[in-house]
Image (tube, rainbow, N blue to C red; front, side, top):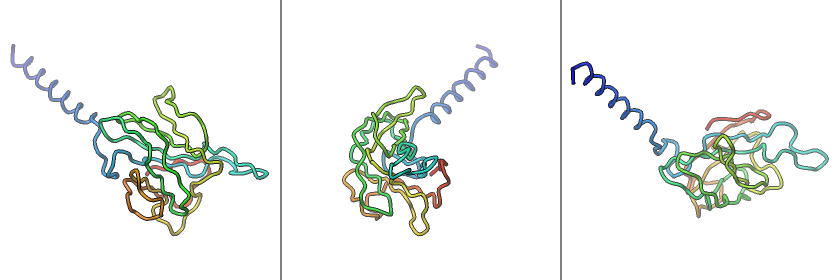
Length: 173
């Protein structure tokens, strides 16, 4: 094998190893657990209510990502919205390693769409995420299973703050 071929093979191997290291899911800096909040849309597009009827509940959501190398069951993780204590833990859903899921406020059937995104539904009959916040920071905490929904940092693994939410805007956390 001549020097040019060996150099090319060595460079190719080094590049492959570097790309493999980048592609491996790892624990993100903004979480201390298996799941991380990556985005939130606290203000669904359009009016929240009309004639006393809640509208577009599933247009209000947050996005979680599994930052581990294993499938994680979302059951029991607590989304703690800092202005209330009426939250409910996430339902059981097996989120594959590296996958992300849209966690919708309203009702629906949990599924994976054609683009590979997962959808989880919390089953609320009204909007629960804040459209505006002036004193609370963060506005949403994701807590490990078994944590209290008590507006404290106890059990928090990931947080997100958006202050005033524009109509239909998604915010990165």
